[in-house]
Amino acid sequence: MVMDRTAMKQLEAWKTSRNRKPLIIRGARQAGKTWLSEEFGRTRYEAVARIDLMNNERARSFFDGDLDVSRILRNISLETGVPITTDTLVLLDEIQECPRALTALKYFCEDAREYHVIATGSYMGIARHAGTSYPVGKVDTLTLRPMDFMEYLRAIGRGMMADAISDGTGIADLDSAKRDLRREAGTTLLDMAVWVSLCPFHHLAIILSCKNSLLTCKNYCKIVKGDAHVAG
Image (cartoon, rainbow, N blue to C red):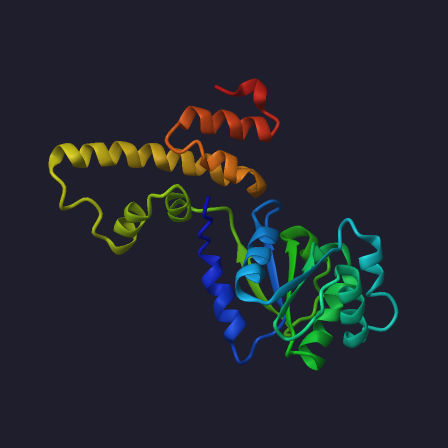
């Protein structure tokens, strides 16, 4: 299953920018921030050095004391077993759990901009630190939203339909019968895309395999969200 997220193009532009700063990817919980960052690192870098600042207390301790970038990178390298070079993506996952890590991004910007650093965090968690540890003017930001309709179509192999909608050609060249069929199919797909957007990103591979079964898609989404008693 291929997840063609449009935000990947924004990440590519960030990677090649001459004025690149550490990047914060913000978004709702379970919108796919970690997956997007890891996939970007896997396909565009030599290696990824990821630390989980929510579940790894030792990783949070790397930001205690002084915020010397060389020391922090050395500790991340030892923790992950990944040598950190300028072709390594350094991923600070769930950065809202470590305000000092958020502050450290300022020093990555000022003292070590040659390194590629992405931090992920939830809207609310990062907002809690506005005006205190947030490195104003020292970071780039990207807001990630749940999978949209065009991304959904491409993920289930309907790229031609997505392209037709995107470029405005739509269904103008189809006869009446085909047009009605496409409209009906498109409506079902749109309904399914809405349900998909409500589900945790790590369940999408299973949900997308539902393809054209709206009922199956709805029921599975309700189950993973804890609403199995109302499925159907």
